[in-house]
Image (cartoon, rainbow, N blue to C red; front, side, top):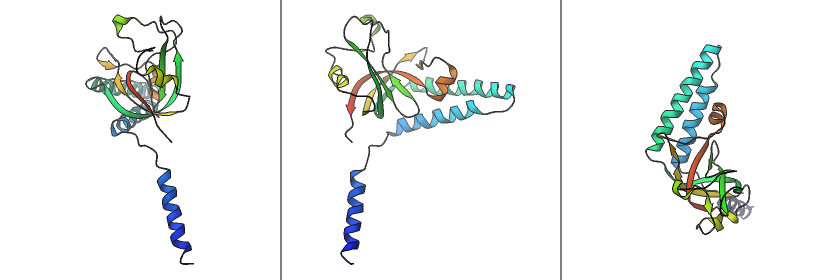
Length: 185
């Protein structure tokens, strides 16, 4: 019986060591928390007038947050899951778009019918770019660490959901990636 207990403790310790997964950086967790707080304000009920006022307040809170983030738009080592690696159909060269699900929000660099213009500092990742081969090896649901910078538009980080509601529930944030690193499980 004495040998069984130490062996059980050793087995539990080893099992715990093998299952450690990477943690999200503090900046990513902070953004997620702030976006959830804004969503809570957006979803507050009440009369139609109260609901309208809550929606307005939530949009103002989100705009203030996105303006603040535009002052320091870079992010480093954010833990996300690959949603899509897309070959952009109208690009002039073999360019890729990457979309990653970072939990409460989505980051992406280019989508669908994006036409890249060199003078616009294209967000798409062309053949020959150091990240092109990395993206070609990614699969849906792969975990990755991404680094880069949010795109800025009119003094705020750019959120591109089609509706205000979509932008509150699961914001779609435009970014340029400078590093994408697969996470080993």
